[in-house]
Length: 208
Image (cartoon, rainbow, N blue to C red; front, side, top):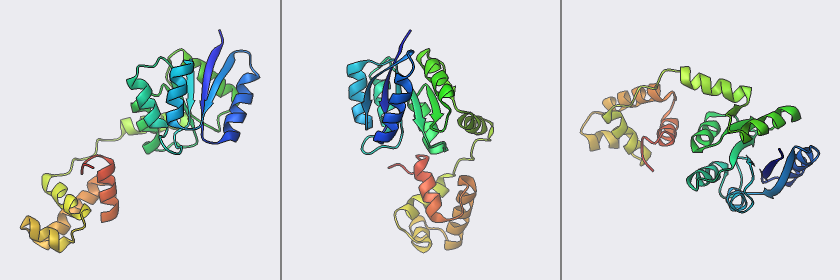
């Protein structure tokens, strides 16, 4: 049975290379190409491919947003992420959004073929590096939550307050503010206030 594909990547040379690889094998048919997440959603709805090869970082609407939109539309196409990025901030959102598999672009051709076939069957596919990352997250202890006061201090810092200003607003000493920040750094796994604020925003602790 021929597996139909939509190739999504913002680099024409990558799309050309992938099209050449798949059209050379009778088991696959490339129905179209998209250069952005929005275009991928539109073409997936129109062409109804079995599998969408999805890059993540593209101009405009990226891959994760496109995956989420297709999942919300209950589109039957399976999504195989094909990217060069294997960090937590790339892998986890893509999987949570509804990607069936996650493969890196340095995968050999036969591994790519196997991954596409497995994705078409609805089987989860993860490159070894990504599988190790996911397992590492599952085995790691859950981060200790920030206390109410630590969150209040970080919120004020994120809004530009100095330690002295935060202390005045919270009716505590400046030394106590520093203590709360040190504890927050340890819980967030960071070393300074800028990283603490960025990580807290990333985890949704400070809102938008």
